[in-house]
Length: 338
Image: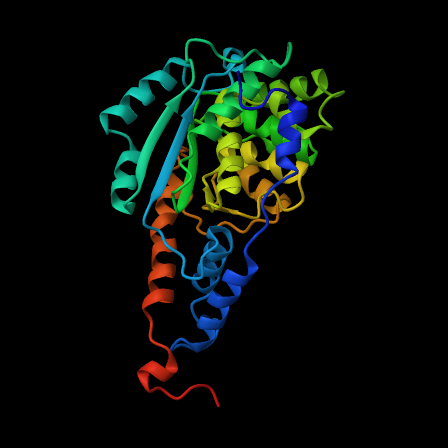
């Protein structure tokens, strides 16, 4: 039996989220005022330790155990020619992850992070959402539960990412359902489709929005009707992280879209998550702005695989190291601000 017996039960869980530990964050903020630097001179590196402390519930944040979760799934809409690559590439890339040959393997090694790849049944894609719901309720809830159960409760930071041919189409459709707009507003070239492929992508998104217009006001129904198994898995993982007191780094367009329903169901539902980078996929910048998120870095990346999140991990490590290791004015014998 799935962890969540119904959409109503999942919605209840989303509305009963633990609050932040503001007292822990206040300790961090107070220490920042005493460190040997002008106030604010390290920019966002000064904000990150307080954010980590707030969601870890400890006055001195840690990044000893960092986990990158990559979920993989296939999509029925891929048959509509919305990607430059065939759906078979999803399984081939999962094999590449397992062999250690992908970008995310190298980036996790460089960042000191563990990597776990969770493929759903890649031989059974979601349904074509222009014809019917991408997933039935049982399949959607099972994927959410798989993501939830993949998160160990004792890690310090979770990064989520994905692999799935066709999933930028899915992310664009879900973003449109949650934030408004149509295919042309949200779709990008994804894996590198040409002009005709982009037109098919926009038309596919618009057809899905029209097909499910009566249900899209409910963010969870939107995720079920327009999403994918790997997006549902990421949603479940982000929800579990909130329940366990684990801050989250979201990767790019697809992972941000996957998590976005939590922010729409519950006010502050994604306060424990940062967007790691601005994807070159144009819809991502719009979605991050709609969620009130300022991505940490912009390197023109659009790979997926949690690659942008992995690149951002050392930035968080730098912020924590400065916060913990810098001397205060009193310790260093340096005169403070007059």
